[in-house]
Amino acid sequence: MEVSAFQASAANISRVSSDGKGEEPDGRVRDRALVARAKDGDRDAFAELYRDHVAAVARLVRFRLGREDDDAVSEVFLRAWRGLGAYRDTGVPFAGWLYGIARHVAIDALRTSARTEPRAELPDRPVEPMTAELLTLHEAIDQLPTEQRQVIELKYLVGLSNAEVAAAMETSPGAINAKQWRALKALADLLGEES
Amino acid sequence: MTPERDAAVLAVQSRLERAVASMPTPDVDAGWAALVAQLDGPIAPVLPLRRPSRARAVALAVAAAMMIAGAAFATVGHFGDPGVVHIAPAPPPPGLRVAGPHTHPAFSGPPAVETPHEATGDHPHPNDGSGSPTGPVGSVDGSGDGHGGGSSTNPGDDPNDRDQGTGNDGGHNDNGGGNDGREGSTSIGSSKH
Image (cartoon, rainbow over all chains, first blue to last red; front, side, top):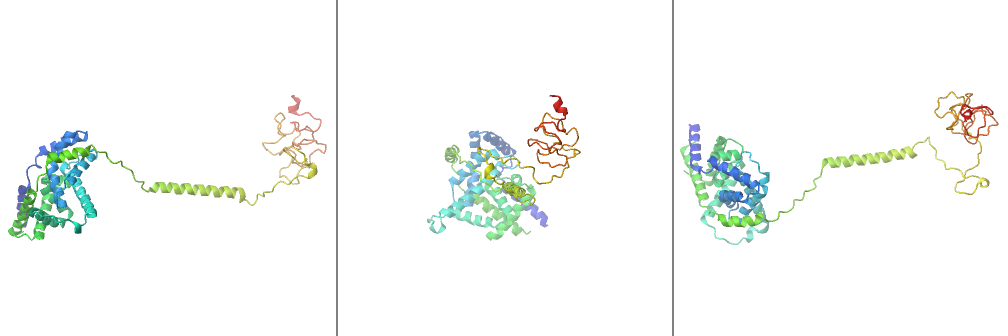
């Protein structure tokens, strides 16, 4: 009973959460070709990569920082451009590689703002309702174990499919489904979500 | 797992999706234009940090140990041997001193040190003989032993020997030549000249 319910729920999650973009094999093939050209210095190819992934990176940065930060988004792609020579296609999607860079950039930005912008001196800014919701979700997701948090961010913010998240985390899609289910269940408890 | 829990999970999932969908989409063109300006910017040079290397420390320690050991060994070899007595040469008597850049004392006879070798000629010493490049090796009569020249007090020495400091090689007087035979005899080497 419990197993069947779990499987049904997991299948439901996969169906609902997948946006269809990442599960297309053409997306991976396109990324691979663009990355190969960009590694040779083709700036147009890198521009295409930028257009494909800037929205996901901006979402991730905004979610991690709690605010928009165009400079941080630019920094992610700047580091990606300079680090393309070291990028190896080992099955991890390019978006997953960008996700790793974005996490580091967000951490650096938080450290910088903590040093130069003490919270006590922050100007009063109007807090949008969505920002409050994002901050609530951010605080709840931050309490998750590392792997569950990564699954949630890669799945919902970056928009990867289960297979791509599995490739990025070097595990199986089934394991990703299970981690996603446990993460959502923990979030429901943390957020006091009731049916 | 209860249906209520399923519903709570699905509610969280839809809440996440709503939050993500409500995020504003960035201005792609403006962002790319700003990024292109940075792509052409100079890259800060990478300065490698000098990390402490264990191999370097070991190599330095070995080199230092070898240097200290070598210095100690050299010190012991020069001054630490009790069998070697360093005596400064005694100045010559004032009457025998002559002018010039080099002053040597007059020949005062052989030193009183007994040499361990007998002047019997039966030692297979490589320097047996007078040391003359033209003379024969060893004396004809087998009584010669030319250790160092003039330092022998062998009983077979001829009292009439007038060697000029080349060692007493028997009963002969050859002025340091290769004739090691008795005075008046003809050596092998000298007979050829």
